[in-house]
Length: 316
Image (cartoon, rainbow, N blue to C red; front, top):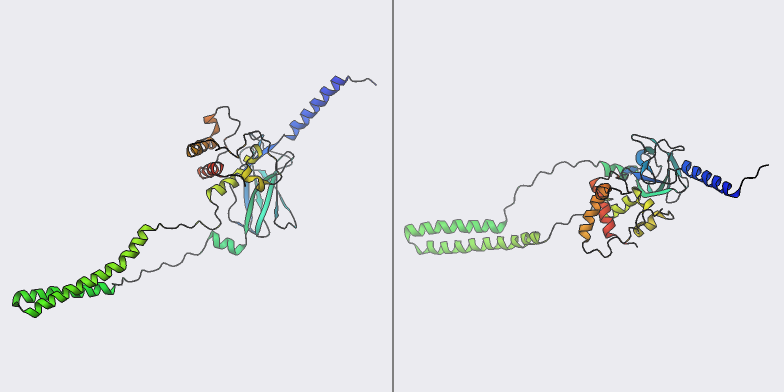
């Protein structure tokens, strides 16, 4: 048997490892099209996402196909759903039907060794879901007939009486008419004064106190939504951010991008930097032609939420 030199054996071994890694695809970044909304137990919903090799190259026709794994807070069974190619290269779609309400955790595996975590899903029961999606419109309320305040009525009566008494006094020069006019004027002044006193404080208070707008039930604020998008758009695969460490559990970033935990440290103009981030997230190549980060096709609302999250959230 002919012996192979050690140096040649090492070269062949390296080539075989390279081929194996190439066939395995390395690692992937999964980017959800959008955060699922109004998920109702027992009703199917569709999840769409992109798969990019190393965060850049769209990967279609994967075998085995990308798989979603979902489980509730007290898991008795994991729901596994395979996705299928849908639309442009690298885009997949899966139809999911979760049997019970509550908070569900989920992950996606495209290729590579890790399951990529996704933001927790809030699953509503059918009654709550129906109420949140399409509540019946109440019948229109007819406005009530205007009510004239009593002090104003008294003031008007006094004014009318005073004017009538003055007219009589001018014609007759009678003393009682003049006294009646004076009394009517006093009544009119008192009535109008009471009316102004009662209404002015309420109007002034309404003008001073701003209207309080309550947030919609179940809708996170912008920074919180940005944190969910940081996970859903796959940012966690390339970047570290301490604010989502608890949410992603044991998932380990590949750290091919900068750490985004303290990006505002030492920056005097945080607002200006936030605006710059929005431009970057819209199209990184416009600001840096050789940028490794791809254009993710984020909406304006998603870009704004991510920029707010990155510039305002500190790790717990």
